Length: 385
Ligand SMILES: *Cc1c(COP(=O)(O)O)cnc(C)c1O
Image 1 (cartoon, rainbow, N blue to C red):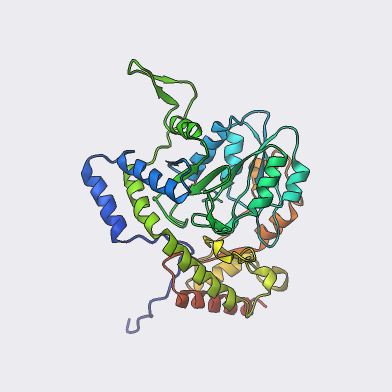
Image 2 (tube, rainbow, N blue to C red):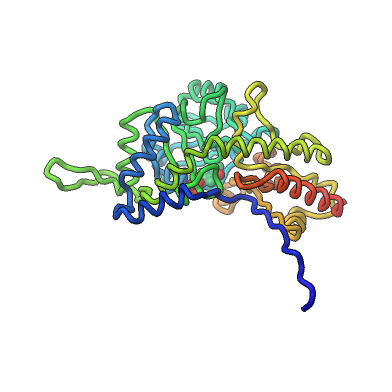
């Protein structure tokens, strides 16, 4: 071989951004002799609590674990119904089913992709106990309307804020007010603990219950033996993860402002060849900076193209750009089709699921990378005309 191909540029759709601080923190914990839950878990919980306005905060092995525990803390089970904003990941429906309750999916607004409270209103019954809205892509739900709705119907709120670490509503961090808020620290989220999640609540008694439920349901008796009154899980975070999370938390605001700058660049560039209604919503008028932009998901003009989405994704991949689908319609999975959910039940959710494409967005990207993604997409869409 005499010729060598130039290395092809490849851009991941999501990636953690770890540095010397995280490596040093993990190294120190590994050498300390205390690597499971310990002082770093307590310190991370205290630091997160400060970030969330002093509210009681506990960390777990994932947000999915936090969802299961939150439902258990609220005593939700057989005979109860839970409203779920359908533009979300599979975990909400899974955990509602796992505790024995019924998942009632709610359609979303086409522009914000957040829960449509008018549709939620139609689905409330006397058995409805809670609502799980997702702050899609990092854009806060309309919190005034959400909490007015939950108050009117006497519902507990479990905010799925997996995508909203660092997001704000009217300047206040998501998680710093409201009912229960859950966060994910999966590597694709705004900060990472490798795997991990957090549960923020209003009540120290609830936080104590979370501690029991995340660790086998064990409580300690005065005679130094242990008791179990509920079959708890095993969801405690390791100190290695917590130490990484503490280093990441210090960088959260910088990560979010970089993500916002990249998203702004995407919006300006994509507007030159895509209609506005296919671009993600930048935020509520007056407080645009509240969006933390965990995901940047456009909709494809598929009816005007000769290629379907898998071919578009393959063509992007061939140009070195990874893309993803965030998310499929949860009510149309086999699990929920068996319960009678069918295509047509949630028109906006389904239209989004059928046409959405998540473009790369993470704290390690540059504006040149964003230009490269946009130019690649423009070329792929031109070929697909
Ligand atoms: C990532 C994600 C979850 C699950 O988080 P884990 O920490 O991986 O369990 C739940 N909901 C949404 C919207 C997510 O994006």
